[in-house]
Length: 380
Image (cartoon, rainbow, N blue to C red; front, top):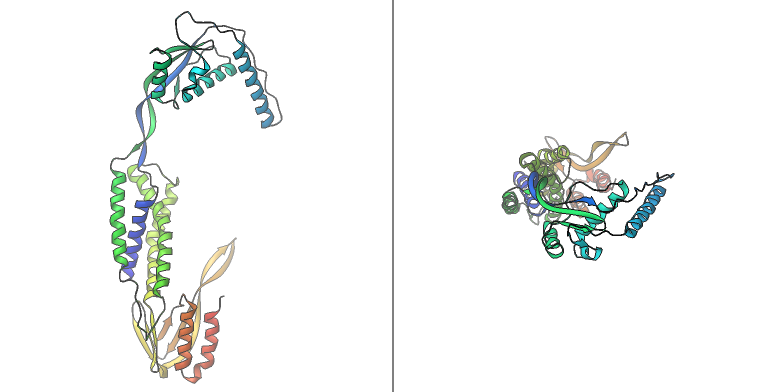
């Protein structure tokens, strides 16, 4: 049962991540792609160069305010310029002509602002990544009658479409489909392995881990495991398929995934299975405890002591060493062996065990059982 639960945890977490988590199945590659290029090739009116004053101020807000004022002033000067009609026969474009082409309009206005700030009479060809090729084609056909040059204000613009190299997201062929298929297979196999793991004890025995609690623990473990598995799969895709990492830190993601597979998963599978399997029988003859790996019986005449042992783990909080209690185990010491009853998740199970101990144990252990019950049932 331990091996089945351990494998079920692995398969279910992998299946859930592969099916439902946002894994990247694309990688960055340099490809050739068509872009719109635009430049200002000529200024029709060679006006007096306007020198912008040096921005002074004691804060970024003041400097930004001053820059905004200068931009507004420069735009006003541009708007007041007398437009000279070009002699080449290029179409003259007004602002309203660009309103139907928002991406191109934004880029043209931006180039005009840069001309104003940088005091250039022309600009080199600029790649307009945000302007769709189709928008330029529509503008060219609707407003330019198929030409590549047009006049806007007193500037002559020239646009063209040409290939250029760019880093782009390229889907790894069939990777997404393969991950979904694997995820479906893992999920089905994991659910199949969970069958038979939830044992219902007979009415004459006490089951330490009730099935409903085991359901909850399994769900919590699987939920935690999916986060670690997500990190592992993300790191593996980056390593073997050069995909774009979702988490960003490949080394930490790999560490988290390996921690889950090597340590956390088997430990949780062992603990949950041991809790689910352990069953106790308390009768007039004695006590029987069935655990994951054994089944032991002690007669009342052989019992030497009944006590509760507390187990701790070390932890470091703000550089201060301390201990944290993780479990309280009821120990039944016999002449030749000792029975260990794990701490039940439910208080009602503890009460049932203590009630039967009080009922069937020899009178000599009454005070011992009473003291142990206080320790076992205490919160701290």
